[in-house]
Length: 171
Image (cartoon, rainbow, N blue to C red):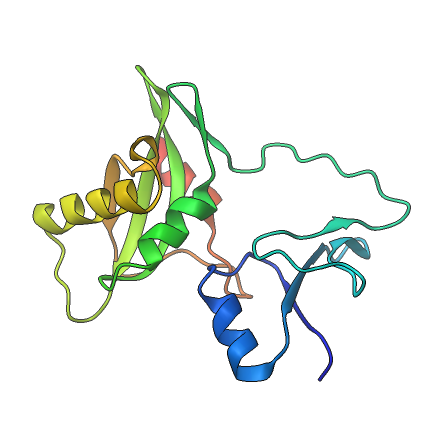
């Protein structure tokens, strides 16, 4: 194996060094859709950057629109960074970060979390997770809303359906 490409959703940052150590190969990312060829990629001549899909393919002009960025009190918050911070905590098995409308802040960060088997949902654990995110990132990025669930909505291919979480929150 010479190359290993990740596509679909970004991996959590801790996966990259583990894969490199196990295989000696740096993971590279790309993005495409069924309707088109690879639109963005980290090509073999580029140095891979964890979390980056690379550069536009020749012939494509790429515009990121409605790219899940949360705007809270004027701050731009990337859901992936908050998800990655939460995934570092042993209580978190899987999570999804979405925005919830807020009259004062515009939007607030919401974490929908599946807990690891040895943890129980509680207000104390929610506060612990919030403090963890504040320490790992910066204080304004912590999830102000935490919902513990037994499963996350997913597509047939296993991607988390954040749009469904957002739709359910609007009801």
